Amino acid sequence: MKVKVRSGDSLEYFSQLFMLPMHLLLDANKMTNDTILEKGQTIQIPGFEIENRIIGQNDAFWRLALHYNLSIDALLLVNQKRNPNSFEKGETVNIPKRMIKPIIHGQTFYDSALLETDIRKLVEMYPFVSTSTIGQSVRGNPIYELRFGKGDLKLHYNASFHANEWITTPILMQLVNTFLLALINQRTIRGIDIQSLYNRVDVSIVPMVNPDGVDLVLHGPLESERAQLVTYNGGSSDFVGWKANIRGVDLNNQFPAKWEIEKERKIPKAPSARDFPGNEPLTEPEAIAMAQLAKERNFHRLLAFHTQGEEFYWGYEGLEPSEAYSLANEFERVSGYRSVQYIDSHAGYKDWFIQEFKQAGFTLELGKGINPLPLSQYKKIYHEMLGIFLAAMYV
Image 1 (cartoon, rainbow, N blue to C red):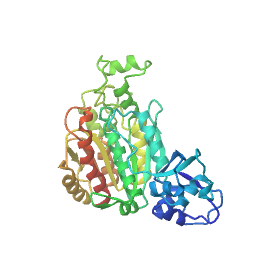
Image 2 (image 1 turned 135 degrees about the horizontal axis):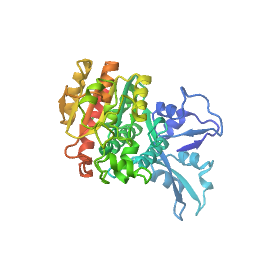
Image 3 (image 1 turned 45 degrees about the vertical axis):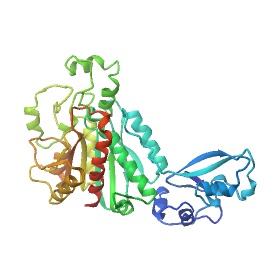
């Protein structure tokens, strides 16, 4: 929600008026302190939206304020009025409405267009969240990153490396929404103080690494791609089990962590629906973007959301740091997922991250069954992952 500054207004006053933490107002407006505001300046108030209401016969202004749990001056501010008596019957009034419910409803078929819409909603509602494009897919779709937090602990979460694991994207987006909603309303989650976590972490979210692949699974191929993709798909026009990017390369087999071993032993030796690691490491724009992001940011912890198995992997060649053991124990406790230190696998994003940076990396296998997992598992997976999502911030 945006408001126009009046004479004498300050961020401190807005903080009191809307019962918001001062640091969130500063972050939402890209300010470092409560500098003097200029009359007419636009200020963003996070966690609020405008609701329109027509003044009725019996609508006293003070009754409106009471009904919406607002001060009269908050109503005057958003309506650019000086006197509550200046409102007339039939006039449309702007009501600043606090957001108390999620705006992400992820239990649906979740493609790249819906992701873009939801990112726009989140950033508009919570303007202290920044968004950027870290690269583009083969088709030219943007690969989005969300970022929030004011701390020194640099965390990264990603989802949908694999196309038929697209359910990981709405799960991750709803986890972010839950965190932001609790933050703005100064609530705890499972007894955890979200304000303190926000001040402890610097969070990076890439919710859909493989937008082309996700769209292929959910909508089928573009006509110009159909013949080639059917060939990659073994002659089938059913793409529901497609795992790779749109060029038939498995993005989570693209990283230079003993990539040659995976190249040698993987059965597909050419572009395919799954498991082809490419002809060289880091040939695909999606994988290149993710590698560049990690190099630029120097993350302390990385969590990659995949499906399925209700387990997670956290070691690589003995290079993982000692804190990974403590994190794994906590992840296992809060989720019920099985902790697995080593598996016979190479060339994954988590493998490369641990190898390159000697920091804690995790591949999380959400849910259980055959990919793509059914939406009937959504709520169960969400509650299992909420504990892990938060534990990565506080351990």
